[in-house]
Length: 268
Image 1 (cartoon, helix red, strand yellow):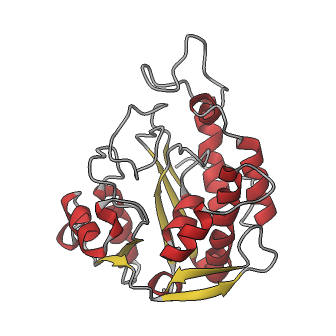
Image 2 (spheres, helix red, strand yellow):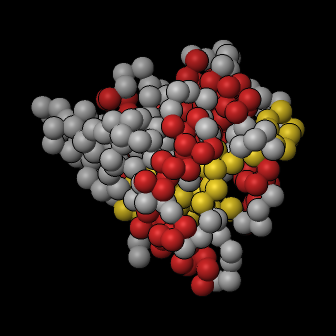
């Protein structure tokens, strides 16, 4: 999961992690919260400063009830990707590859490159080694650069999904749905009202459900998605980022074989 960039005040609140951790411990698991370091200039670039940032955001073991781990140190596992889209081989951080179960706890937001930054991006970028992250961002294909990055990210996401299979759970918290992801060191208004919590064994279905509901929702007044017309049914990602190709993104996800675009919403 993402612990939030310092300066961002709409990152995923620790209470959601607490609820998940408590449920897992009740089931007999020994959970830990984990993320990996980033490439760019940020407190999250190094393990020590990222851990300090996580603590300041409330992700402290005494708060969440389990260890908080920042993975790194080039302790990775190389994985071949059959039928890859962009990357024939990826490197996954070992602690995220060798767990017994995998739970993706993601804050659903828009993103400059991804029409939906939720479980799929959380898994793909969040589990990657620094070298693989660099390869993802530098990927070049027949499509525009951002679609190449998406395709490369889906290669690693597919590796994790196949690794854990039915031992994987995707949780999307569609609250404070901002126009940018939690990597930004600033915060904007949410683009739509809160949509709820989405849970599925299929991260594709979880992400697609959130994406569809965001499209159908009215824009949040004063947000980047707000317009002088009725915005219900409008693609908010393409609205905020005119160069975005939402339909093509889902084609890439489907081609990667990460899961099913079909879903059934069961409200609890």
